[in-house]
Length: 310
Image (cartoon, rainbow, N blue to C red; front, side, top):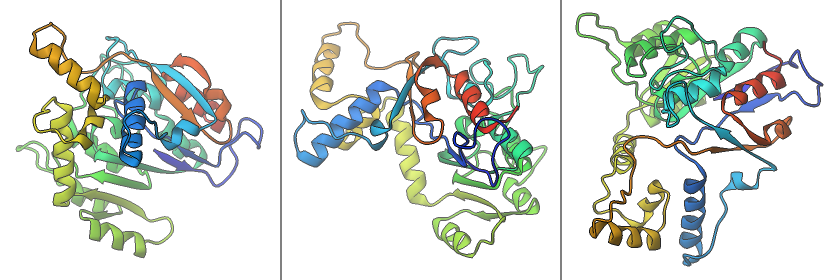
């Protein structure tokens, strides 16, 4: 999520109020994955497996840690954890910005920045635009699989810019057909569905125009499908470059594979998610408030306090 305000926020000193807010979420990225990436980068750049090449955000001045459990599990999913970050509320796995029984709707930090302070808001993602993590900043659904309904909320949000993979289920159920792309155009969005269309759209855009770039180029689709296959545990014929998806490096992989072959009972996987704490890296005005250990709902609270939304 990216947000920019034209004026100062209503709370806090002027020196502490961020003009721009960039919130990057590395979905599934905890300490092991970051460490593995640093090892991988070192091996790639220096040809040595025992060296580390730091990822840029490892040099940010403030580092905190967030607990990620949700209202039903210590091993939550993307929907509930992104909800906690976006709205400061706990909910059940698979649920986006409503209470587990759907009796209460949560307003997100992005919606508040837009409504209360007039911020320009953009949502950019490497996955489908109506997937759980990006959806957590504009949607409110009892199931993360309600893709068409989530897409309708995307359009209704009035956010200024969306960029990511093509919309899932863009036509809805067979008995209630809808074309989300046409609906977006009707709502005033300039829609691009290929890289070339997106580049032309940006070049010709006027200030204040609404834009939705949902790339469906074949290369992007193949890259996404390969990532899903690797993440699901389809590790046959893995290349050296793909080890990073597993949060490990070659010597450990070889050793563990040997254990697996001997049926030690150790499984190199999980059935879904884990309950690891996740790092928070911060830079810029007010970054110091993100130091320490805290619940992931505190990310919302800290952003709200810094920007002055209620």
